[in-house]
Amino acid sequence: TNTSHHYSQKSEQAVSPEWFKQSKNQLRQNHFLFKIRRPRDHRLVLLTRMASDNLLEKADWSCLNKVNYDESFLKWVTEAYNFTFDTEKVKEVFDMTPHRLESESGSNYHDVSAWTDSHPEAYKNAYFYVCTETYVQGEHKSLTEKVFKPIINFQPFLFVAYPGALKLLKDLGF
Image (cartoon, rainbow, N blue to C red):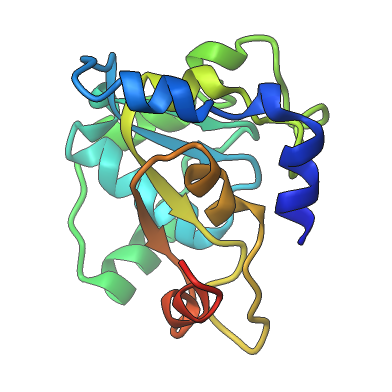
């Protein structure tokens, strides 16, 4: 309901259906879009993996908080997920934080919230969106604006969320 209300009032913050139809063969500047405002553990795990695998070079990405390199965090990630990392690349990316989207160069952690970071340019310049829900473990289960942003912008997405989130989206008709 909130998504429908927001975008019906602020259509300039979403890709138009006309643009989407005409963009079918448009080459995009970035392979994917990945937004982090608050660096929760699951988001940092993904950022760390992407950095280590040189995937961020193909992305428009943001992490609006400063992230300090922490060996104990990487040790936890290695043990919990059985990942190995290129620590130098991870350090480089963490040193780049806070990092902003190309189309939101003036934004910072305090002026971006659930609905204020909706600029269609970022969606127009990427093929898909890596969407990370607020919570991925525990009892708190809800769909937030994060998954609806790529939907309203006609963009395919990878959805990192709690078990059952995709079913909930399907139950809502998506």
